Length: 269
Length: 77
Image (cartoon, rainbow over all chains, first blue to last red; front, side, top):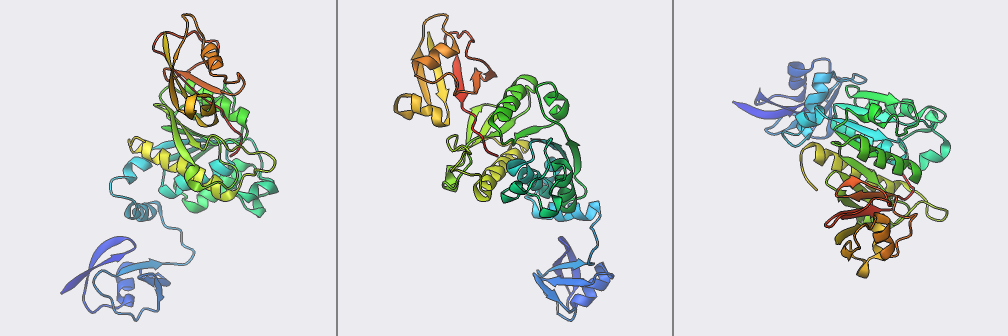
């Protein structure tokens, strides 16, 4: 008599009457952390049909195949192959870009192309995905470090430079989707206009109007042309008295990231 | 000639009843800037302008049936 259980996100068949220890011995003998249905176990627990077991060795980084299996298991079926084959460009690694990049890495995107010329300063920490021990680092290096900790198997291409009309195509020409994630309006304008000119087949996801603490639902997606999308309310600019705050910037960033995913999957807005 | 004008975000305030889309009668030879002027849109506000989905500028001369889209780029990110 056998039962079906999940071990490290894979469905397996085991005999009835097994304990958690027996499952460890069969599938990962060196595991020193046993998780049964979300709770840490001591090994003596009986295993039942449908149980979900995670066997870990503390400090061990899963290899690429194992991590991919874990990602595939948590994705909607059929999505991972497209995500893994995709390249996403992120222009600007501030409040928007750092969060978009992390969301992409957690999805297991194939390649991230990241560009920023700036360094991490303390005021960034109110909304950007950096840490106090990264203050003073180049943003491309600090974010790469974090992304490596999230998923060491995502290919990351960094460009520590100031984007300008002359280099936008060189940096992002290979990308399937380009995310505009700058803070300054003149840089946003330059990137959008240059990408419209120089990257004629690349969808552009820009952002405009995401300061303050207006309702989350006011962050919308405005389709300006078949391939130009603007995320935000297009009204609330960052200025004295209306600051950039982590929650609303995060809503905008993840709206950009979700739109990037949808476009990569061939879904229309 | 008839031009379709699509304005986004705060630029909608310049269209009748804050619509997103509006048709405009324009004289032959009119530019994007002329049409935006007719709605009272300040020249310095629309920072991204497209005509028929391609990047354009205020001095671009329009043709009958063209679709002009524009929005203001706001700081913050």
